[in-house]
Amino acid sequence: MVKVPCKLVTWDDVVNWCKALADKIRESGWIPDVVVAIARGGFVPARLICDYLGIVDLLSVKVEHWIEAATMSPQARIKYEYTIDLTGKKVLIVDDIADTGDSIILTKEFIEKNWKPAEIKVATMQWISSVCKIKPDYYVDEVKEWIWYQYPWTRLEDTTQFIKRFLKEMKDKKVWTYDEIVNTFKEWYGIDVGEWFYKRALEELVKKGVLRKVDDKYEVISV
Ligand code: AMP
Image 1 (cartoon, rainbow, N blue to C red):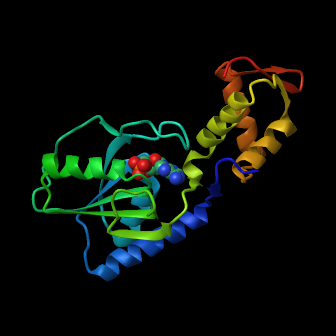
Image 2 (image 1 turned 90 degrees about the vertical axis):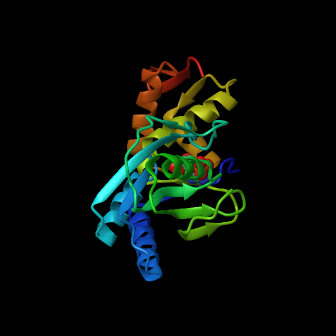
């Protein structure tokens, strides 16, 4: 049974969503002067949107909120604050997904107060309307039931954390085969990320001292 509902997002999905987003922005007649990517999830969409709208000024604000995949830390915060003058400029904040909306709200307030632009709008590929505290000005998918979007730029990070999570919850099982780990991953998350990611994630967990490789099996050391 799936424990954390996930959608495996492909690079093609991302390109198509960003094309749709750029079309929506263009059709609205509002073209930004500056794009601000919320790091790290907004980087790829923001870069594509700059290309599709012909925008050269791309900046970023680093927000920490979901430090571990599908596990929220209590409060979003901006790391590395800096001040620039955007007087008179139209700013588009871009993120991959608006989930709680906290990262976007925080970034918007920070830019309004410190960078003083003329106007700010927000674009995301996904908007989880059932839980989000704000509605982006532009979005592609309205998501009604919460799901974890497994974007291609967090595949190894998510795979590593997802494996660690079930090892922790099933901590009575001390020794695993590779196949058992892969099958449990598929059962829990309902997606298959492929051998390269499973193997690299397991190497990472060995490196971190979570697992020890004994012959062709994995022994749980500390989770
Ligand atoms: P939030 O502040 O809750 O709107 O989300 C902050 C960031 O965490 C997002 O920009 C994503 O990079 C990541 N994130 C949050 N929720 C999800 C989700 N359901 N699926 C994938 N990534 C997510």
